Image (cartoon, rainbow, N blue to C red; front, side):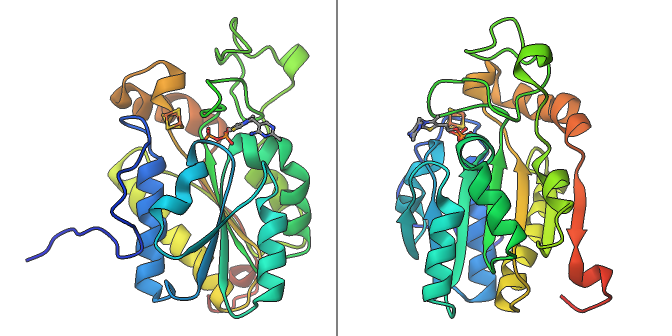
Length: 251
Ligand SMILES: Cc1ncc(C[n+]2csc(CCOP(=O)(O)OP(=O)(O)O)c2C)c(N)n1
Ligand code: SF4
């Protein structure tokens, strides 16, 4: 009996991510959702700038590469030109919540019928561990060696809560991938975010709390524990907006 097999929507290319990085888990969940929905032939992904810049090597369906932070704008253009296709972005917190915040907010408030996978690891991974908009108060990074000082660097941005205040978006949720239970919930949320697009519901964003053991300076195991101890208390998991559910409609 086959218990587990690689999703069809992943290529055979070996992932370049650091040992213990949870980007790989999130790639698998996206690919599984696309396989299960049978949309691999019509899906177009938009890769970001960040550690997942090479996502187009790993997904077997069509991919486009956006300039840093511009993925929701690129996805908007693709979706409007090709409305029958399923279009998603895959973005880190530096990409989505720093340089790309405007594109994110405006795509959400327009309720663009796209799916956004937002990987929040509280740091700029690819460029060597600088402070991100989502770095925690007191978090040591390359650009906050004494810890994030909120009096000069401000407070972390809770993207899901903020977007949920807008009338536009259909579905905003936060999940994590640091243990089996959370991975299972993350899978359900990602699948629902794609189903919403198939059903024409509009903008769906899944924020996934992810690890960066390399730049956090921790073992992979400790990084998963750090998510429970530090990330989730600041970024509570849960559904922040589900317009159809609020109206009592079917997904
Ligand atoms: C216009 C522009 N500005 C800055 C950079 C440098 N840069 C590359 S990746 C990155 C941040 C990536 O962090 P994040 O989006 O959190 O993704 P991660 O690597 O952590 O997955 C930055 C600032 C760039 N490539 N282009
Ligand atoms: S630097 Fe961090 S986010 Fe990037 S691949 Fe390594 S562990 Fe993952």
